Image: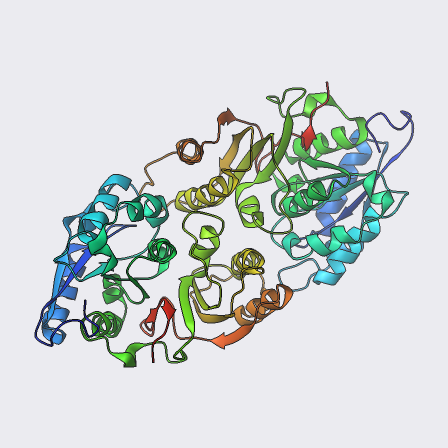
Length: 285
Length: 285
């Protein structure tokens, strides 16, 4: 693993799988070329499964599970990078994490959006170093190299400058897509977030659906002892036939207040190139 | 109240409010005209609040709460009919039901879709006769009079022929929109569904979102002692860029199996004119 456990010249082997939807070979080639140029110590290993297609998914549930488990259990791999989100990780997370071995404990796991299902399940199990951060799929965004490089900066060099800028040493953190986390509450995938500052972001949801998901999440977390909630980006909100009447921040503040959860302001995560790194758990000094 | 408690010639006074989104005066006029023609004993009382507009909602949270509470607590009103769904009832259900009095206990409450938030909260509180069935807004559908009349058949005459045809005397039932119920789990709105046959329907959701909501619901209900799940209509599924790979019924069967919930087949509820009546609780002989 990168953060201080290897000498400066050791390669960092990064296994890449797609627990949700299929990735494209051409995008993988762009990410590999970028890494070769900016992070020569990074050795990117795109599993063939990234390019499988089975209906909505990057291969069957079994294929996606097997790929993740094989990479995570491989002692010669340092980090697991989830290729992209979409939907599908919720279908495999419980079974997949149940099959992990000791080698999987030493790894860093990086992703966001639907990959949050695996991040949460790993964190619940106390397995590995779980990190909310950009994915290879971000290469498709305008200036997407910035996001992709940031994840490499963390995995290869453990650069502190890529952390979400509002994070404070000594505090515990977790970060999720709102809808993804809302659907994890009450399931075997939901981690214990007691004493954590929870950062949530959202993308492509109507504000009424954002309100509904925030109602659900805050109601479920009301008695869970959160330190508070911070709001990341809320992007690409579809236009409805009339304005909702409240901003995403006002919605978040209202549901926090109703459920006696501290609202702690904004944070720089989201489905965009500014998506910063949030390692789960207590932030070191 | 209609079902056998009044003489045949007594008017049935039906209070109509909009706990979610605004109704249109013209549609209300059509429903009133239909009722006058087909159910002369029905006295429809559209509260002005049905036509209020406050951003996304039919008035502020306070206005929607006050309208519902005033109608429900009025001893001269026999039934409450929710005008339409949309989104908004989750924001008022807990507070509104907490303000109900003894007069509210004797009433029938009819609606579906987002109104399920109130149906569930009422049922949780053991308040009134809770019924999943068509709403005034169904008048806008082709042949919508069929749906609207069905709700009146139940409220005015207690006609057994309008019940969901697969219902069996002695069994306990509840019926909800899938996404609405998924977002109620773990909140103060969620009723106890032990020993119930739960019927769910869905509208206008991508199949991946249907799968995700079914994962969430079935995972949350796995240990709640359901008798089983029946699937209503799954309508207006948006086209994705590729086929999902499973039908709504296959998705339901899979999540039921994983969570050891009995899958009991299809049922005739949904966002369509075939939406039948499902009174919550044990069905009498």
